[in-house]
Length: 425
Image (tube, rainbow, N blue to C red; front, side, top):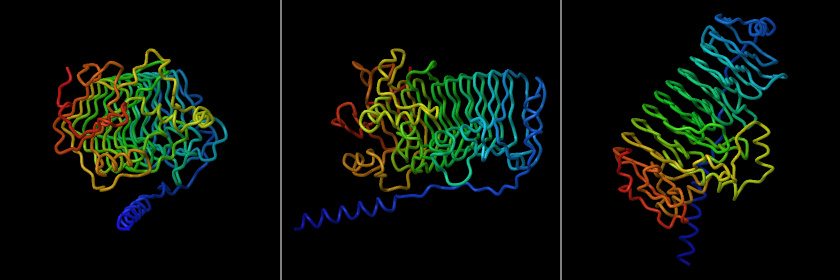
């Protein structure tokens, strides 16, 4: 009888914790007073010449169609300020993006806001020498799976700078750089997104001075299979990544839909990542995790259906690939990861039980949320001493640590961090 009462009490405590953890989705609701200058402003984009400036006036402007530029050089698109010039695509009937730029060089966009495109707010592809400065890119109203995927979206580009921008409400990633080379992401804010900032399959990336908060996950550094380029050499420092515990509202079947809420930073299958001198705080799953792609593939095998993946692919999003091993050029394991000199803290006493990791922490880690977690899945025949897949963790104060040993059903689960006290050669 006594055991039954204890069990009942434990179940009651868990129920209370679960109820108190349930959250509502936030809203971004700025006041707008729209003016109709669509015809004149569309004409500016159509007639834009190289080495010129598209001057956007002060005001809030509605558009029914995308604004596009292709094969332009030395062009500036300039508003009157992030709060003064607002381009809204609410009710868009033609095109998917708000602004779309392709095959261009030396393009600067600065000092305006862009809102509510059907797809991505600002997409730049196959271009070189791009600067996005003081751009606010957002979806208004309560955040929703119906929001566009990416707020700021350079892809297949080189020499990209994103600075002093804000990204709000993306159903995938707020600031996303994909398959690009030589990238700087600095001094930005990202909130109310599924992923605040994401570097995917990109090389020579610097991410510093940013604040990511109230997203599902603050920062993702991913390498995904079946793409034309693979990333590495990512330097992340002096960022403030905190309180990212938002319910995941991504399109089911997309890769980010598998990211648990409360995952502050996730480094997945990427090589040569330096993560240092950052503040990472107050996450309900982990402050930082280093994982292989196998963790996501397992999600596909266990929970996903082909019809769900089709939903993601229909919206142009990366789905989870259970057949990733068919890509012989792809290495699904992280390596040469250096986590040092960071400040980790957590005000939460209980993990979220909205994902399996919360249950794992309860069963295996006395209910404690780890600051740093490593899944312990490495290449066949590999080991902790393997130089290519080495994970080094040093000088992070009193940061807690877990080694999951996920490859062996958590049999070797441990808090011993000593094997990771190393240097990257």
